[in-house]
Image 1 (cartoon, rainbow, N blue to C red):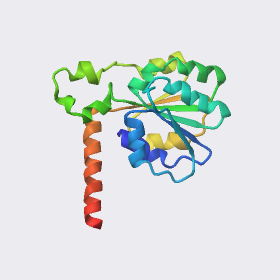
Image 2: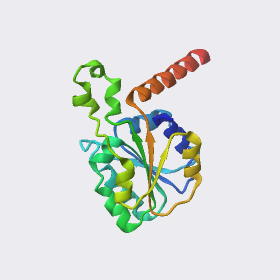
Image 3: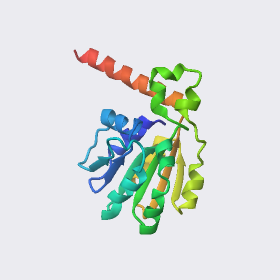
Image 4: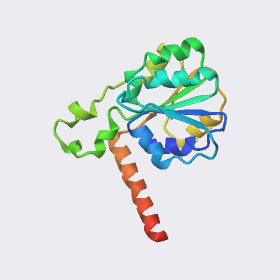
Length: 192
């Protein structure tokens, strides 16, 4: 399972859903590969904020009590864990999908990925235990590694705060993106 699988699966969210996308790889993946079958409200933070405040903003989106989804990477999740308290206190129906690749996955696509200082300066692994964070905020927690597990959770109604962890590696994420891009190029070449 990969980050692209998340975009593929969430394309089938019901029209009553709201979707908040974190910056960095998440918003890029959804821009390129998300193909919603229903009209849903989609939001995200842009500008100089970067990844700060993502959970808090998604929680604000959930104030209207509609089923709200947040797709976020582990670093952005780490930067705003305190935003989980507002969701817990107000019992918002917020599902957070954390794509945990133990660091800044977007930097693996850039030339500095080959530098000897990459892990310290760009990869920045945090070794974050998402299950312990979920426990701290009384969130329902799921760790999944198959697309059918995510599919079931997408169809299942829920109440309150729910955290779904999808564990991946940055190198696998890079490979999956390269393979998908190659398929797109081949298809375009075939159609022309």
